[in-house]
Amino acid sequence: MPKTISVKKSDALADRKWHVVDVAGQTLGRVATQIAHVLRGKHKPTFTPHVDCGDFVVVVNARQVALTGKKLTDKLYHDHTLFAGGIVTRTAGQLLEKKPEELIKRAVWGMLPKGRLGRQLYKKLKVYPSAEHPHAAQQPAALKLAPAR
Image (tube, rainbow, N blue to C red; front, side, top):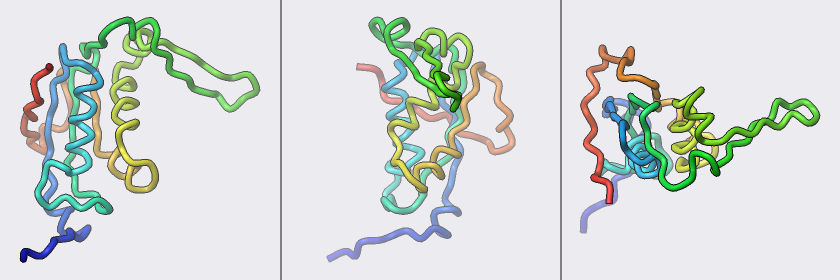
């Protein structure tokens, strides 16, 4: 019977790759699930739930991500300034216009585990509103996303 392999943190660090994802015209939620999958490392045969064995993901063209239905006007994002009465509410359309990278980051954050491991995984996500990114030195490979259904 084959033995179950549990990857150590030192082994996982040596096996990290960089991926670039172009989200232009892609649906936000479907892209976010696939990005979270790669950040977590579930695409690898050596996946270990309690170890950060995922890869880095660079997302480009965040400004051109698609939202279905009436989400641009009806989906709300809440922030708080930590002052009394300081709640700030923005629609997805406003967030896409002012901070498109924040829209993708929030969608992916919701799909990652909460706690120390989730925060560690989240730091490997790099999002940019246009096609330019400063990670060319890492030679990121294009990540092929599953086709929209």
